[in-house]
Image 1: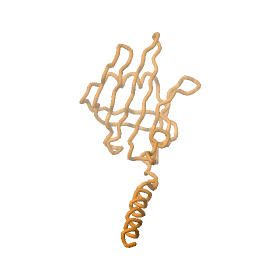
Image 2: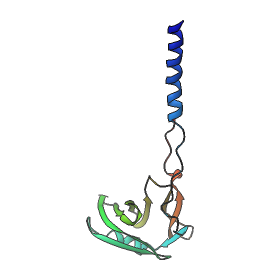
Image 3: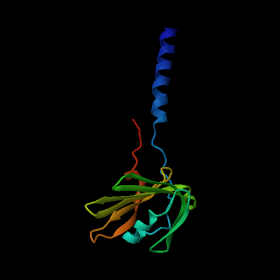
Image 4: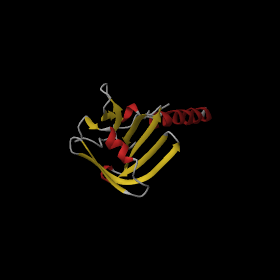
Length: 149
């Protein structure tokens, strides 16, 4: 009987530990609390960013007095029609600004994000219905999914 009681206690403990360990984590703090919801960017501004070389310090001024400053960690041409640049931003906890330029039939398209997985918000570069680009504040939960099983 003592053996059965000990075995039940061990099994109950083993069952309870994983259940306690997989509780949802607290929400992440905001990295961009004072940044406007939409920041306009011109195609010319975005295109000029690709002229910087790895190791160079850059300061990128956008609309609404929003500036991103940091050093270029990489500037790669993956294919003849695809180039990606990554800039590390010390003012935003070493967050990375990743920007890609794709050329297809002489049409240039830009995509990018300012993202740090330790924070609850991010900025995503999107083209609006007028064809203009904007950095839009988004919830990081739309990018990352918690792996709770």
